[in-house]
Image (cartoon, rainbow, N blue to C red; front, side, top):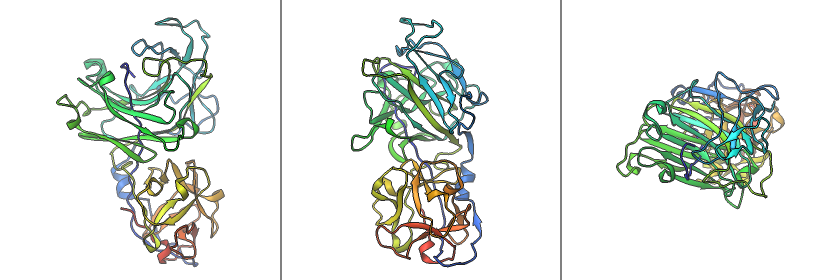
Length: 421
């Protein structure tokens, strides 16, 4: 967020590779299991992981994140960034909460006079940098006029070459007057500030990003950067997009996340804006190759050639996972996390109430790292939940549209065979 009047984006995606398998709703010995997508996992090792586990009120891990403090005149932001836990602390439930407050407890001075707001901005400039890979966060953003949350990257040579020659990749930005949209942008020499090159992504049906957690990511490879939201790729940029200007995304970058208040682009808060406002961060994960920890996702096909589908494309916790005619929709785009989860629409394939018994139904639920959301590929191609030792199974067996998926003893029958691209 170094330049003025510019827009940025957010994207999330994960790559998956599984072998076909079999199973059935009869008792049999479970087949041998291997880690989910072992080739992809090896190619895309986790290089940075923060799940923000810790006691409520604790600070961030200083071996991963450092605070930036002070005001920001370049964007005409209104907040003063502080260090410590007053504006950035763990909530004890696996989240980092960055809080913007309308206050000035220490008589902070800003470019416009006495500061009116406090917030926090963190980076990994001294702790982690990387060129290329899959960079992902899951966040619930604030709402309100003048709010400006962002998850982004800067080139690690900024101290020597300056901005924008260092390059900047904005993975996710939102401005409060657009509650249903996020933006992603690249900035470099000849295409910075309001001339940054990017695109936006909007939720359907008037939904607001502040209403739920969403996953934002980029997959960055030599001469290519792809952005996604909840696994849906919406923008790709290459050197061909730069009108002859120099592509500077060929060296390590570091991560930043912050919650700004006011500025040229979002405008200042007004009487409709309530405080405090919070940016809630579930995790930040980075893997070493684009398309290994990430990718665009793909369909899981099963019994009768049908696809694993999220009923009605709903993101509500508890939504049924079913078989349905393959249609290429986001409800059928599944990606695999480095933690062995299967994800669609920004949530995880989960077993109801963490059940381990035959017949426990599969559902969509917030990713929480429990055994109910872990999956492994059986040597016969089945999908095994290690916590139960049972296989993902099409009830019945039936291949009719709407057939619920469940776990059942692994038996090698056709209604437990699953294939990914």
